Length: 418
Image 1: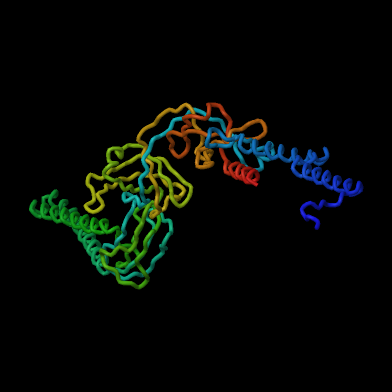
Image 2: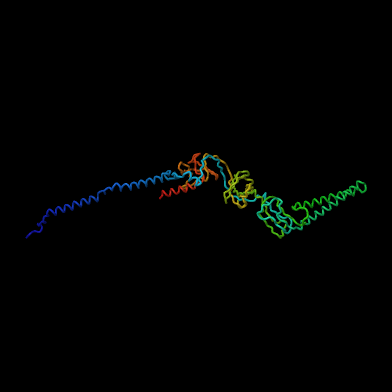
């Protein structure tokens, strides 16, 4: 019986041995290729990614090269503009220079009539309106007829004057005759003195009747009606209020016209208690309209002595010349009260300062355009701003139209971000 454990496998022939060896060698080669480094790409293909990476790095450098400090506070990249482009964009060039900066406090105010040149016209006699030549808003001259009323009171005054004048004429005649008779020793001196006394009383009566008419602004009785009363303008001005109509019965104290000379107005200022120490009579002020771009210089002409019980503020006013009628009563204004003046070494126009990334900058003129120069600002008076740091006197900058440069800077930043 044969032992199965002692049996042996049949031997491989030479062809089978060579096949197995080839398979093993092929597997080892494949594993080495997989675990090894991939073969280098052709030179033409490897240059493109490298160039792209370098270009991207260059763009990043350009974008961040204008940053100063770790936080990157401002751009110094040039905004390229030619002279023709600068002119067409309306960009004005100026130079940083020393200036006198005014320190001021701004207070609210309102334009009002100059009460010293405003009149509330009343008839001073009751009557019925016959005509109203003056219209609302009309400019009138002193003595010009505003309205005509028929007044029985005026008729009585004129009649009194006429009677007094007649008595005066009779008294003069009597006095002349009595004086002649007395000089000729025909009549007694007593008659002459009585005639003289009657003449004096007649003269007083005439003067009294005339003064009554003058006080009313009425003329003496003429060829016209005794009751016709002409109401005339007391000075040159404009009719700003009118409360009278044809056929209306008016009382002697009714305000029928308000006439104001608007060539001079008041800017009335509301002054809090804390600012009373700087608001003094004679102080310089600048009055600026809130509704449009207009300003005027003046001096404080009055400061109230009392504070309002409810508002706890005082009233002050500035008298302004108003030749072009630009300052209209009712217009709200801001009043800059000058509290001091200081000389500064470097200043720029207020319109030149822009904000970039919440920091103040001034666009400085360079060879090919402008750069945004960060600055540190000091005092300002609404017209000029002190530059404490970042700019030297004599440096050219964009004084007007700087907002155009800010917009161009914003476009450049957006392109770099993309």
